[in-house]
Length: 164
Length: 421
Image 1 (cartoon, chains in turn purple, yellow):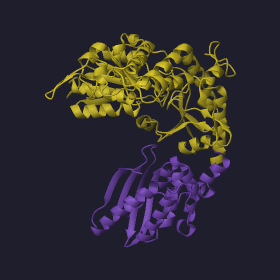
Image 2 (spheres, chains in turn red, purple; image 1 turned 120 degrees about the vertical axis):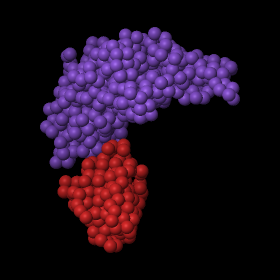
Image 3 (tube, one colour; image 1 turned 90 degrees about the vertical axis):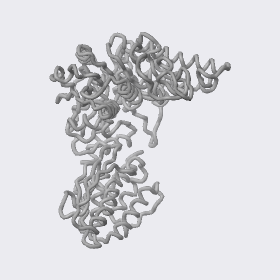
Image 4 (cartoon, chains in turn yellow, blue; image 1 turned 180 degrees about the vertical axis):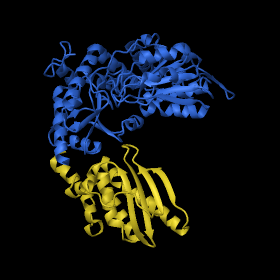
């Protein structure tokens, strides 16, 4: 590996999101809160989802981890807040496909926007879990929030390890 | 201790260049034309040609199952397997070869002790087990499981700000209620060498058994289990230039002889009927199934290799290179060593934080320059929590580590700081 490989991993966009994360902090209201960890390295995230009907009203989070995991959840916040849950899930699928594509998947900038900067991460197998930590937490939180929204007086919380 | 400039003359009797020539992997060049700088030996050590050849020869010429094959190769394999045990016993000065129980690693060795002490009723409700806050998870989780299973209480020594075992509470921690004290000799994260003699003496005075996790100790210093006074000592082969897949539990014979088996299966029995079984004497009682045969041969070659160099020489080099690293690293602005900051009672693992850069990113940048370190919690989450950090970067050294490699690390860290500035 060399400088070019490092620069493909640590794109300017990633370093910018790392230094100035979007939507960081835990906020109310929320229908679901989850806590995910990456057991191999200890990275952690607490993430809340607020649904406004069919729309993702807010994704707020408190994360401890490396530049890749921090930048990834910042991009997640940009990409899913204000979108419908269905659209958000489409972005998740697209991001997951990019991460698991071993560098062979051409990212769709219209769907992933700043998320295309993570294309280089797919070349570093040890870092893929870092990039997916926040997204897996979001997927978990949304599915719980959908249940909670159906039965409005409860706030679901869960603590799980990252199965990825 | 004196630190001599250059890599070939750390001590008169210790020639790092010649030692490095025995380790083929240290000559590797990584993509980008980068020479390997391997600073992850506390994770696993590299292997000399002598160990690789011993394993290769075994598979090429002598391979058979042991103890049950009546043919010629079976006899050769059995003899080679048991010779490995003899060599390990001599290496740690075990009073008897039958005190050396093979496991798959140190974790299994510690689990074995915790399991059979519970099964034997040696730890029960109202009893206490004492560990420390600086243990590897493999010397925490089995004791949590044992105390939860039996209704006993788990207690632990704290760690001082300097990264030393806090002995202030030793008299209130180790009492008549204490049945087992289990602690690491050398911390895999902080690098601390613990005053095991003091703890063993105290435990003995209350009649408690003592288990020593020597995973980081046996590779880097002379160990004499007969003189130590502990009841059990656990370590693993792959950290002492031996193969993976083999660990060692040394135990006092009289104690092993009265403990029940761990896993059931082939070779651990005396006789089996459909109504019940009786068990073989130690060490076979604790070695169910086909044992790590080629690994015993490889481990025998590994301890031969280390004995040929002399463990006191290995320890002196470890001390010198650690002192050099501690000095060089602490000159970097924003770098904080987590653990003892001087090379006094200290092993060759140095964990640190670099202000503003997460350990993953540190190790990634170092890797891009061919430098291998470990980043994360090093299976010691409580020790990290004690120092208020989630993870650290750890550089660890061994008999083949040079001052030039430490210099490359320091340069790599400066580069990392600039990259993330």
